[in-house]
Length: 306
Ligand SMILES: Cc1ncc(C[n+]2csc(CCOP(=O)(O)OP(=O)(O)O)c2C)c(N)n1
Image (cartoon, rainbow, N blue to C red):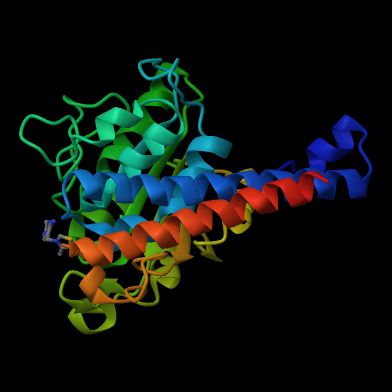
């Protein structure tokens, strides 16, 4: 995908810019489909995990890692790299899968998921796996750590951006709101928080467990720039990433509406997908659906290339 500004600079016509954008979106959709398939590959190794929340953030992670972040196999320890924090660390399957998709993790490592001594435990561990910036899983820590990283980069004169993914069921943790105040106070416009609003959490609908709406109004009240998008629409995610910071001097909150368990046959939008222990038959059906989604996305890439 290219921005309107890049199109002008490259001297390309509007129609060639649109074609380029369609091609890039199709590529990222294929990448998202492969990433979902990798989540299921890990379940083939160890059939239990926080699958629902992992599958709702795939498009966000793919767009971040493939479109926005200055990060990759050659930059894992570069001090000036962009940082990604999966504050809702139970969605680790998504991060492991996208790290494999961008070549930071070798695919066979995925087959050790959840086993004793594995680099891929149920929650991410920076001491075990390259590309993990902080140990998360106890909810409410990613945004405070992200504030520190953004401030630290500024003090060192680095251009690094910091991206944090939160869950809507995580927002009741008060530390998020301390961090929201700090980020606005220090004008951390290199900090972007994606809130994965799939409307569900561990024990039921978020609105019933502890409703936090309006999430957008809350972040705005703290002084953040806010935008709401369909978080499973990779083009919409890219459009926001191209416009960061949305407002100079303000951190950005992206309220991303998503579907929990996206792509799981019969389990999309269910609390049952939160921690999923599939039967062999369920896993087989999910893999068949994921393989079909990869094939459809690959055909779409071919189609837009013609
Ligand atoms: C401090 C803390 N309290 C409770 C938990 C237990 N817990 C694990 S996941 C979860 C729900 C999180 O909801 P959300 O962030 O919306 O995740 P998603 O539905 O997207 O998977 C909770 C309460 C935890 N991990 N950390």
